[in-house]
Image (spheres, rainbow, N blue to C red):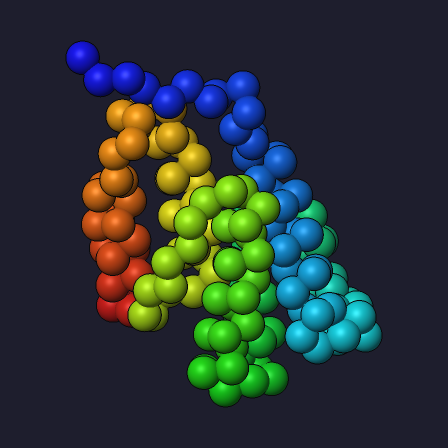
Length: 143
């Protein structure tokens, strides 16, 4: 019988995860591009996409679209990866960059990892998460 990690009481709920996604976006964009750029992004999200800052974690394709309209693919990927790394630090998860993964996929993987935490045997590597990450990223490229 294996020992299970039971940290359910400490695990963030979906609302908390969304708050952390927003904080990660804000902090990373301000750190890389400045507060004015962040304000311009949120203004654009509101006027062009009729979406609020608080809806953004469920509509990350909007942020990607805005970044893609301003930056080339390589710079956009760097920004998304930095946001994801920031989020993973806040969630106390180990970040592994995967080729072709965008912010939306990284957030999905983080949510999956958190939901799996109390089902993992203590000290085991989460092979399922690694396989899931590769599958998610490959599927996003195929779309």
